[in-house]
Amino acid sequence: MASRTDEPLFIKVHPEDNVAIIVNCGGLPAGTEFPSGLTLIEHVPQGHKVALRDLAQDEAIIRYGEVIGYAIQPIAKGSWIEESLVVMPTAPELDDLPLGNKVPPTLPPLDGYTFEGFRNENGTVASKNILGISTSVQCVVGVLDYAVKKIKEELLPQYPNVDDVVALKHNYGCGVAINAPEAVVPIRTLRNLAIHPNFGGEVMIVGLGCEKLLPEQVIPVPDKANILSLQDQQGFTNMVHVIVKMADERLKRLNERKRVTCPVSDLVIGLQCGGSDAFSGVTANPAVGYAADLLVRAGATVMFSEVTEVRDAIHLLTPRVVNEEVGRALIREMKYYDRYLELGEVDRSSNTAPGNKKGGLANIVEKALGSIAKSGSSPISEVLSPGERPTGKGLIYAATPASDFICGTLQLASGIHVQVFTTGRGTPYGLAMAPVIKVSTRNALREQWHDLIDVNAGTIATGEASIEEVGWEIFRLILDVASGRKKTWADQWGLHNDLCLFNPAPVT
Image (cartoon, rainbow, N blue to C red; front, side, top):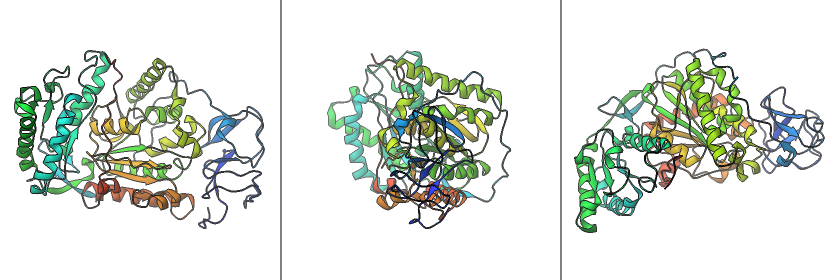
């Protein structure tokens, strides 16, 4: 591809593709001629597909070398393939997929890379030094918010080695079917959030006193010294006083912690995308996938997620699992979510947002094929149900909904130290418990949001950088951010979204 951005450019991903996407900002008008001989017969917006040859009615539309849909009518060469012209194919059948028949070879180890983290007593490492205050029920949030504001203003300045005080707020705990089988998901999530490595082993939970989810159920080792029940306190001011006092005791201990040199194998990195567009699968996600391979080679744990955004590309993932057991677990999570969507009388097509379509994605099939590029080329070593913690290292599939906020919450419960988040349309999303590195798919987004985007992968589309070069940039930035040497824009501005639990159980 040419590096001059004023020349007409398109990207064809695979030799068998019969469509390409337009690179140029603002799109290109009818009459535009490409060196390949293609001439546009109508305006095609940036990121949207152009037919590289005449397509007959019902003919397969191919991108990434895969069928993303079928033409609803004849489409002439040089035409804009707008989403209404594409009929979505059925999802891959799950029962007959090959499992582990094309396991990628183990890549050579990557030695010599470290980061500076806080070593915990249980052997885990933290990328931040945070006081986390858990809650057992939404009822206590107003009081806790008041107390946290007071802690940050009056106490935190006294403890310069502590990065933040974070309240783990959620809408669970009462008014829910606490004994329903599916309640295991939100309860497991809250338990694992409470012991996140970035909390340094310090546990503190605020409950009400009459909720269904007892505070003791949220922490792994119940200890009355770590639990405060508001209904046991005399008035509001005393509630706040006791919360502040408990926090002060823990802040003193956290403040004694210092960063030490740690191997990259101690890192757990989460990968996610939000506000995806047609460039996601050719710029940001492949670059993140390359960084993921580097992390796995260095011994780290890397997890990708979002069930509906891999479901239509599952046939490309099951051959990569290390064994049949992992493959069956991957199929199990796909089936679970298929059933979950059916109960809501929708299917995976409900995933695709208006912004995705405006960015050139015709449907969830095209989106999923671009999404899985984040996983790189390593073998898939483990599959986690929502909110579970990994038992090993390497590339892991952590099943979550595709919702940015729920996925982020579940990946935190799985113990991520840093999240890498790709976006084409743009989002100020961030997490208080772990830094979020934002990677843009397009140059125009980086230019528009220069103080929100951490890495620009749009240079890949214009030929100014390679996937490998941007992948190395992301890898190095992960180590810098995990070490506290650099701040992400989201952390610099304090842009942090609320935790959002996945609760498939009934609300009573």
